[in-house]
Image (cartoon, rainbow over all chains, first blue to last red; front, side, top):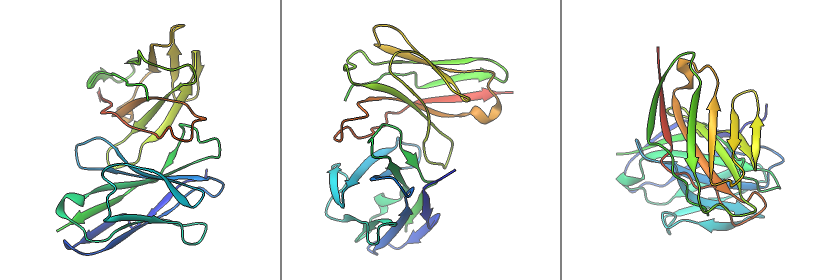
Length: 114
Length: 112
């Protein structure tokens, strides 16, 4: 069964450092998303990406965040200068051209900012 | 996006049937109802989606009354491994601007 893969599974970084979280969406999917989940809280939408551009972003997705699809297979989330409050699970998801409400999520990257 | 309301938590026992109800009074004509499951430290996983009446797959059944203002996710004969958070979402699958937004979900705890 096709799946969304994320790397690394766990990343520890110092406050102020840049991190790049990587995702390989399912190959024939055209819609891509990043979500985050702070420990014990709900899954929060960060950004959606379609046709090589951001289609929507939340208020969490400020200038410190950026996304890229550099080579047609990877989908990355960059945090330029991490803060303690960026510590969370980050989930990548992808969906088919039907843009349905059925999205496939990766296993997540646990980001710990120290 | 239609707002949804579901219980914060539920307990049940192994072997029981579990029904989780979600209210969505403001559901729009083109909206579908979708349920996701999330195990601890994992990403959400699509379970089932429906528009009206009943939908069944290998994991669950989804019951939607005629007025579509609520829906019930039914898990037959649960086991300990069904302990998870279950999210009810309402949205238009064909609307490009209709992103997937999760609420707090229902935390289901299965007891031995």
